[in-house]
Image (cartoon, rainbow, N blue to C red):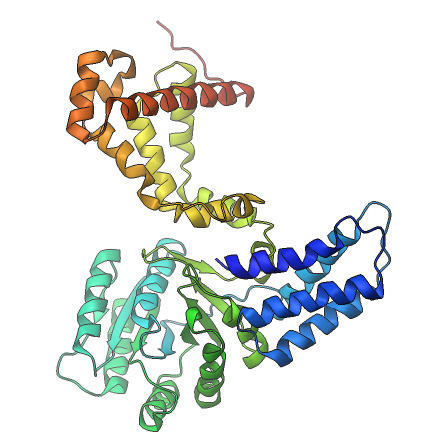
Length: 439
C-alpha cells in the first residue's frame, strides 16, 4: 500500500537527517521533494502546493528542542498535515433507523457489488446487525447473481425481483419486506454508471430522493488516481453523498485519490477495501493511514485485527498445552488459520513499524502457508497430535504425500520445534500458571 509514495517521501525527509538546525535552505529542499512525491502519486498540483506550503510554514514556525532532531520534527509535521488532508479523524456510518437504508453508488467496475456484500458482512458479524442486501442493478443480470452468490457466502439474505426493471420500486418493496422481518439495515446495490450519462445520473438521484437513505456512499476505485477525484466531484453535485469508499487500496495504487478526495469534495472517506475476501474491509482512519504512508506502521489496526480473531478460552488452553509440552501440529494449524483470517501477509507486515522498509523488495505471498498445510495434512491424526513420534519412515511417507522434499520437511519440523520452545518460554514469563490436576 502506497509503497512508491512512502519511499519517495522518506527519501525527501532524509535530507534533514543529521542536520543540527532547520534553515530556509534545507526546508526548501525537503518541501520540494515532498511536493514532487505527491505529484508522482497523482495528487493535483494546487493541492500538492497548498499542502507543502503549510508544511513549510509550520516547520519554519517551530523551534527544534534538544531532544528532537530536525528530521524527526519534519516527519511529525508531515504526519500532522497528511492526517489533516485526509480528514483528521474517522467518521462512522449512520445506521440509525428501522431499517436504516444505505444506498451504494459509483462508477462501472468500481467494485460496488463486492463492497455492498463486504459492508453487509461487517455490519452483521462485527456489529451484530441483521442485514438485507438489495439487487438494484437491473441492467446487468450478472450483478444480481453475483450479489446472490456473495449473500449466500456471508449468510445475508438478498432481495431481488427478476424481470422488474424499476430499481426504485424494487428497493421500496425490499424496505417493506425488511420492516416486516425486523431487519436492522438494508444495503441497496445500484447499477454502475458514468458521470457523463445524464439518464443514469438522474436515476441515482431519484433513488436517493425516493428512498430517503440514512447513508449514501460513493464507491470509487483508488487505482484510477486523480480521475477518481474528478468523478467524486461530479457524483457529489448530483446526489450529495455522505461518504466515500475506496476500493482496491491493496493494489499498486499511487495514493492520489486517498490523499485528496476528502479535500476535494469535503466528504469523509469511511471505508477502504484492502483485499478480495469478504472480511477485507477496514474503517478509514486518517491518522493511521498517514503513519503507514510515512513508514511508521499501524500497530493499532494490527492489534484490532488480532483481537477480532482472539479467543480468550482458546488462548488459555493453548498456554496450558505449552506449559505441559502438549502443543502439537493441530494447534499450530489452528493458529495459522487465525493469522490468515487477519488479512494478507504483506498488509500485516506493513502495519509493523519499520517492516515495510525492510521488506520493500521482498515478494511476500499468501501461499507461504500452503506447503506447511500440505505437510501437516499428510500426517495421520496420531502424528499430528504427537510430534515426537516422527521417525525416518514416517517422515518419508509425509514428504511423499505432500509433494515436498525430506529437507523441506526437516526444516519445517525444526521451525515448529523452535516456535514451540519460544512460545513456552514466553508463556512462562507472562506469569500465566494453572493449577495441577488432582489425582
